[in-house]
Image 1 (cartoon, rainbow, N blue to C red):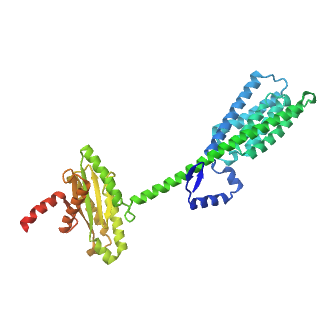
Image 2: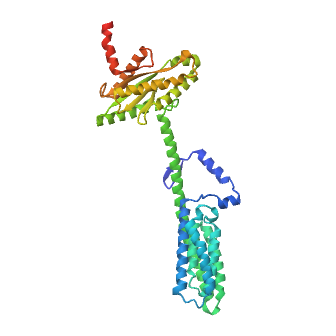
Image 3: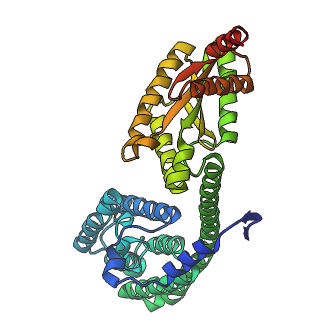
Length: 405
């Protein structure tokens, strides 16, 4: 059990072992550069944001150089060449999003270094220490702080400060307080990297905590769903167990009562399965039960319910079917059972006896419907098995009993 910001989550040992094993595995360099993306969604959002901002800055710089700035102190040809390279570099990243496919582009130092070199060259070409574009370094330092941990942000700031100093000294003028201005601007870069880096680290930490919680919640929900399913299903046959089946059947009956519809219950019992258990063993009997469950499911509609009542008994609910339609369905189920006898000795062939009770004709509640269907099924067994009998047949039988007594 672990707690993340007041939220208690459970992580089993097997998951922790898998994670530890995965962290210890080392990948070849080439595979690590070009494997499919494993970044968090937060990192991908940051990469997309930086790519779009880079594109907007290149467009804005183009417009400034073309229409708004005095270019007499600039190396114009070099400036336009760098801007052309910036378009070739930034447009494919915005459109193709390689950071979602290759790790080489995933918050890598290579991308940050390329930005640093391009900015240094651009500042040098547009006037060095007198360039109006020196705030580009502030933006780029902030971008590094958004992408990396605080330590990497400070290292990146040092790289930027170094390249900026080289570009700044292109037009060095000791009489213009250039050294103080250089120190001031490099210090500002450091302040930005530390400040934004701290904020980014806090946001990334919260994002990781949320991802951990969501992952563990998903694992717990999956485990809970599995346990709930196991609690509803009969392990031998894969059908609903008796408790779960009765709950679902009660819901169907309430629906039929509310809509004024029909509702039929089939009580099914395997014929001669006990002899198979006695003579061929319980493994053979269990195999026949599993095959019988599959045969029952094949003979039913998707909205029908089938469950194991106990032993070799099954109960089926047929929503919206009258007694006559349920009779036809029951005969089809008996026919399906004949396929189970392939490979069995002649004297051990199994069958299916089925009793039917229907709402609203035979009873108004589910327990009484099941009881009548069960008694009707035994009437079929009394007559030799593999027969369908209804609650109406059961009433006729009891009416005939006094006359034959």
